[in-house]
Every structure is written in C-alpha cells, then in structure tokens.
Length: 167
Image (cartoon, rainbow, N blue to C red; front, side):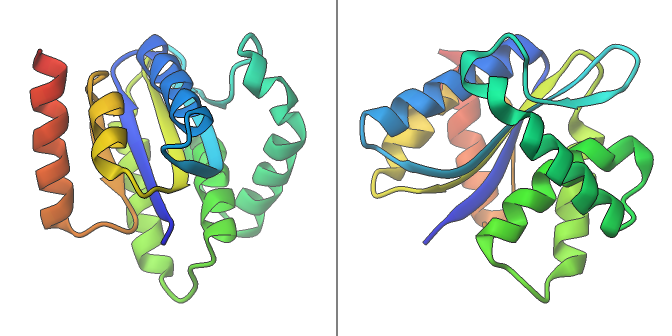
C-alpha cells in the first residue's frame, strides 16, 4: 500500500537534506518513491516547487506546468496554487477519489505549516521497512502530515521523529 505524506521543516536546507536522504533510502531498496516534491516558501511567502540547483529536480519544469494546470482546474487559491498543484499531482497518481474534503484539509494544513524560509518534502511511497524510513528521515526533525495515516498513527510517528531529531 502506498502512503502519501508531507514533512515540513523550518528551513529549505533541512527539507533538501531530507529529500536527498529519501532518494538514498530508495537507492538502497528500503522504499519505492512513486511521486515526490520538494517545496519551499521564500521570505516573501511565495511557494516554489523544486530547486533549480538540485540535480534530481532540474527536470521538474514540465511537472510544475502540469501541476499549475491541475491547480487552476480545481480553483485552488493563488497563495496555495503551487503547493496545491504538487499535492494534487501526488494525489492524482495515488488514485484516491471521493475524499476531496480530506485532501483540501491536508493541503491547507501543509500550506499553513510551511513558514517563510521553510521547506517541505511530499512523498508517495511504498515500503516494507517503515522503521528504517522513519529512523533515517526522523533525524531531520520536521512536522509530519499525512493524507493516509490516522491521527493516532501520526502522533506516534511524530513522537519518534521528535525523539530522533533531539539526539
């Protein structure tokens, strides 16, 4: 089963480092990344998808155009358009339907948590090694949000992330 989640970080650098670690986990065979997005908010509050300097994300331009079109179709407010497009693209690939209110809540939560100068990773993954994924990504800290996990599961995972990032 695939899981869609976001982890929001106080800095773009933390998000980029966590994104790189997620790619390393995939390369090592601990998880399969079905979709991914690195999102940041600059100091003026503008949301950006990807990082032109990041070698993995240089080709994200086409995806961003498709994402903006998706956002426009669903009439996402301009401030959240880029992030909504990224999350919407992941959700569309995830195959969930009939849960528009849950998705809107998830999208709004991520938008609200992402502060100027901050960053987030959005991942749609499959894994047979969730403990390893939590351990390796947990060292970066951040606030976990998910469209697929219960509040109880989120609280348990957030507790583990907080513990790992304090070490």
